[in-house]
Structure formats: structure tokens, C-alpha cells
Image 1: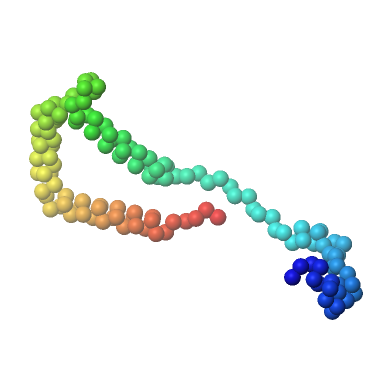
Image 2: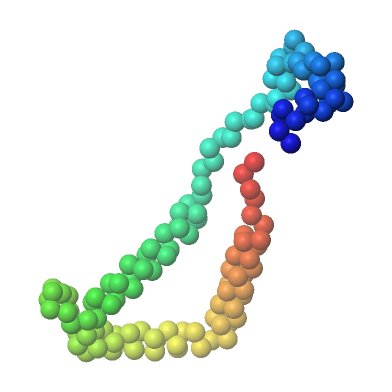
Length: 137
């Protein structure tokens, strides 16, 4: 219905003429403004260093991946980096010796048990931190 259609109807026309438009009371704005509660200021919260480390880990891993890819490739513009042959002939034997020494040190059942306890404790700590996050209020 259009606005003019209301006034053509006899009943609605009489209602509109008899009842003027309602206007708010004199102190309406003051009462509404008094009812609005002020929002408390949120203090800036210092983020723990663990948060910064967690944010930086993907970037560090990506940088290491690119470095390993570039370092192990024999690209002509990377002449200042040693190629695959250097890593295969010099570094891989050192890693083999290192891992053989670590194997002997971790073959003890006490060291293995300690590592299992430490790994399970770290896992439970991480799960606890993930599921019991406290939100800043």
C-alpha cells in the first residue's frame, strides 16, 4: 500500500487524524545516554616470547628449505656455494660418524627411558597449552 492509500481508507484516515505522531519525552536522550554503559579499556597485553617463536618457526623452516635446495644444487649463479659433491664427499661421512656415536650413547636403557619420559612430558605439556588457552578479557 502507498501512503496516500492509508488516507483514502475512512477508518485509517480517522485514526491518523485523531492520533498525532508520538514524540519522545523531554529527557529521552539523557535517559538513553545514561543507560549506555562505558566499555572498560583493554590494557595491552605483552605477548610471551613463546608466541613470537611460534610465529617465526614456519619462516625459519621455509628459509632453511630454500637454503638447502640452493646449497645442494649446482646452479651456475651459485658458484660461491659448494655443490652436491662437497656435501656428499665431505659432510655425509661426518654425519655418519656423529650418528654412530649417538647410537652408542642412546643404546642404554636408562637413557632411552629418560628420553621417553621427557618426550611424553613435552607432549602432555603441549596438549595442555593448546586446550587450556586463556583469553585476554
